[in-house]
Image (cartoon, rainbow over all chains, first blue to last red; front, top):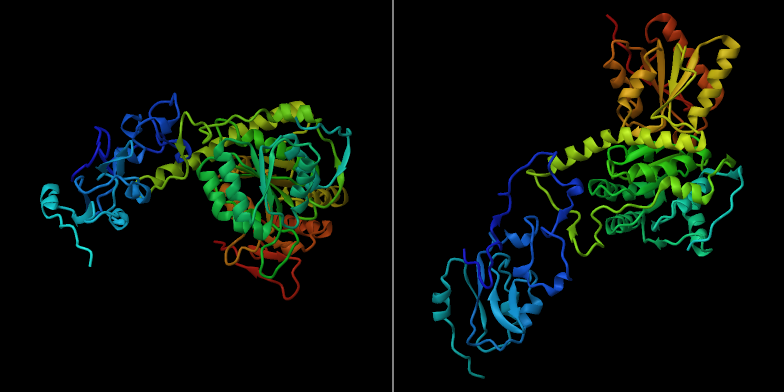
Length: 149
Length: 411
């Protein structure tokens, strides 16, 4: 499975349910799960996701996209960095930096297609392809600009 | 800073007022409530304390009891001392969230004024709502009068918030019989009471932004069981802390509480086991029978309904020949819940007294001293005969033909 943009060593390394199964004496009291391995010294909003000390209990380190059957493919050549897809994505799986679109986080994208719907360019900069379609092949099939009728 | 209230050495308070004063003295951070008869005055009084500057915390009016307990869960997870009150239908509406609160190990205090459950609609006291909470993972303390409602509410904070417990605690009292009966209550002064309860110690609070945490995670068949087992063990382990807090309370006030209360049990031949205000009725009956007829009668009463005092019950009843267990809740196709738990405890001892049960007092039906005396005498007849002479389950105080279920099978 493709991991997409800005994947770090930790992102999506676990399949859900594949974690070590400890006994009742070792599970955390009250099922209270810590998001980070260490205490944060600054506001987490000011730390980039790939630099945050995510714990194994955070879904950042899990891949939760195994049930995706179609995926969005991003075409940098057409994109105008309007950020519509970043705003609308329900799984924060559009990765953008300094208002520049970078790509997709395939560890968390569920393939809902909202990003494609809201993309305003002609042709669209995001299109849905089959999960097992290679990115290069998908980009080679990109449609031409539609003429105004 | 909250204003202090100067209290007399003896105040005349009903159970509701006593509970509300204990909440005020504990300086609760958030009370989220949806008032319901007969516990309405607890939060009504509390609202008055807030309005008059006697409380620093927040008072949240919720849209339902489900909403009230949900707000309590949120506030407790955020890191505050939290309490509320309810009864009956309101308790029933809270049930879903009660399990959430205990599963998340949030030490919320819920003062419950026991009332029957509809249908038919009824505002009077019985133990249906208390029984409905018995599998919810909360510690359940039972007050038999207004003084105890006050004392146990203060103890509830200290027990639930102990770092070795971290479980929510209910303090029960009987609707109207306790909640609306004014009695002499010996309160602590504000500073003394707060010093006993102690400053709230947060644990994994959501408002600690340097350490974000998730509350209410989902677990399936691979994790759920371990968490529930851990929580169950925490409930049983809380016995030690409950005893420690009761001891500290005795050292402070001279008033002693035990996980199981025993009255006149040293030489008792027959006993009544009951909960709530009925305990005091049974004590009066036992005193009279001892004087009038020389029957060695005693009373056993679980002060802590959960964790169930399996160990202490076996001790308390080990000397009796016969005991009758009273359940103030319709068991609906089973034996009474208290009957079941007491008999299970006694079955696991070499000494097995003759045990039977009564369903009584539903929907506030009166249970008077004479009826308690009759039941004691029936137990004495069983003790003398050496076997159970009546059906195992009978009904006390219901009109119509005599109702009873199941006989003992004798070899």
